Amino acid sequence: MVARFTAVVSFLFLSCVLQAQDILIAGSDTLGAKLIPQLAEAYRKKHPDVNFQIQAEGTSTGFLALLEGDCEIGMASRPATPEEVKRFEKKNLQVSRFLIAHDMIAVIVHENNPVKNLSSGHLKDIFTGKADSWDGYGGKGPLKAMTRNTSSGTYKIFQHLALNGEAYGQHILKMAGSLQVHQEVALDPQLISYVGIAYANAPGLKPVALDGIPPTPANAHRYPLTRDLFLYTTQRITPEAQSFLEWVLYSPQARKVVSDSAFIPRQPKPASTGKSPEQNAP
Image (cartoon, rainbow, N blue to C red; front, side, top):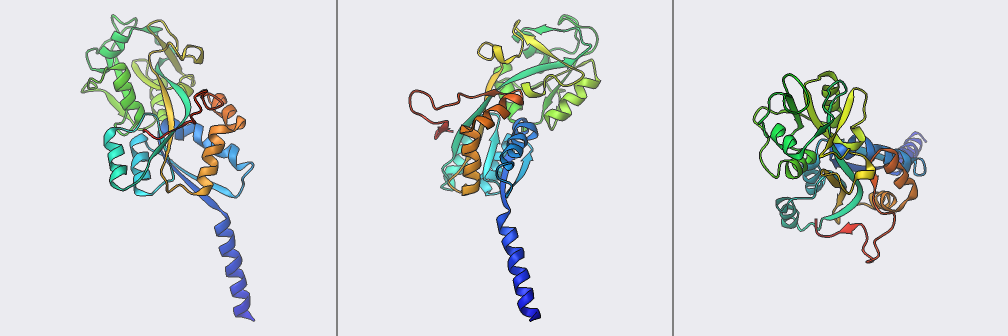
């Protein structure tokens, strides 16, 4: 009788464990610190049996986790590089890319910094290390520039868009995530950095216009530092993760979450060409 009772309890425990479906997501801090957790929370209201494990340590880490089978969905704030794509091909993995939102990289300063606008040339001078003073840029005193760390997709896309691919200055400070960046800038009137638009209006910060164009959604087509945000998968994706991905891409509720998070929603329906948000060319 005891043995039978133990067997029944074990069966019920195993059933509960199997019903709790984990979706593993890794990569971009821009997506993983705010938007994806909010999407996951909204999804779980209708799918309470699904759990999420989200690791937001940078786009590069997401591609590595996806490659090694440590996640089912990779978050990316930049497209995969040719080298990253080749690593998937060597393992016979077909990687697919899905556009989920648009973003604007906002240049931020302390709220008491008098600088309101910078030219693209000034921005390049600052982050390539050619400027160590606010004099001549609309401010006063020493200037300190801060960027994300090298695993960040934002670090690489900013280098491409703002610096024309040139190297960052030797003495540029580096921080791991968007939260740490805006916390530091909010404490130091001499600092300048950049974050995704969803983080640009935190207390203590002031977004700076570039070439006279403020980083607002209405200016997305004119602002010089606009980018796309992606989710990546391979053929190893589970049905549960696939269902979540399709909800993110096509649900009006997900679109509202994107908008409420201060990102810019993608087109609500596939383009007139008939193509879906999936792009097989990463």
